[in-house]
Figure 1: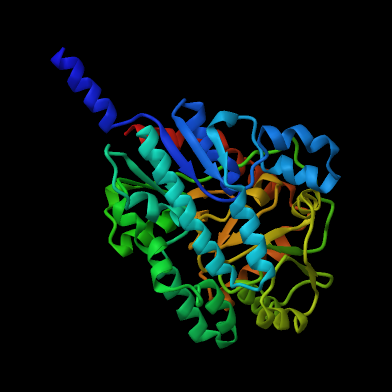
Figure 2 (figure 1 turned 180 degrees about the horizontal axis):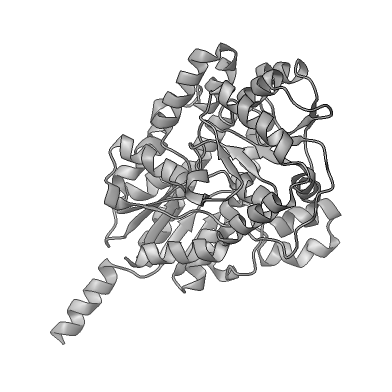
Length: 416
């Protein structure tokens, strides 16, 4: 009887299941799916999600809305384990229309998710696996049980990022506007504390890249608390054989300082490239100061937005993806390009060092080293067009990094 009581108390103090929370379709829902596959998902809390009711009416929705609903759904998540806070999405859209600073809106709404996690964890006596923007409120609450607090740090520590961007701004002063928006100029110190110090309350910290882990170690986190689990990708069954014989470089991402677009443009201006070479920029948003640089650079095509199918065609027809980011928690677009057979140029301040093996068509350039980037572009402009071997190796690299491998890594980390 006494042994049974001890076991009962142990079960209450170390519950098996987890509450997971984040807004949007972050990481394609792979973390809650990993928990669901292991039978340890208590609840996944998110914003807009196409649950039973939404799914029942998708067939009568306009095509665009139907596609959005399908995007916010995954059959591997048990419907009874998903809770949508739709009011968060509605409030977000209302604040955007009123002209409120997006960074402030996101920070305020993120707090409600942390509080929702805490409330549900108290009721179900569950563990916590929370993404970094939502963890502060959940981790700092009082509980009657002892939940395991697992932090998913999906972006490098904000102080680490701020230092890197400030150093770059000192060299390229025209990026000041971009620097201000990236570092949350309008966000109060109280709200910034949430993302800066959540790691201090975590029992375990999961990072998608060694670079993200490095940022936490610099902040003071212990090495044995941090685990690196790189993201994955679904690789298509076949690879298209590009017939493009002219050098085509592709940039895909927000047109801001953090992504290193200004470095790409400055290098493109200075590089001696074969005739007909072109740089394609896929940027839904681009900072005004960097947009001015786009307009003054030759052989550049700006595409404000493309469909998933169009993006895949761009990967398949381009010689190389070039995105030398200053700060990336991972850089999923690198894997997307590799999976489509497109070699990549990036920086060490991403997940590329974690993905790379000898022979992979991946080239690393230190951020801000324009001469180095010029040299790489000039070299690749003569070796990559028509090089199907490089495209096969790119796809082979992506095949090593499946989403199944990522989910297995998450589960293994929780069991240690």
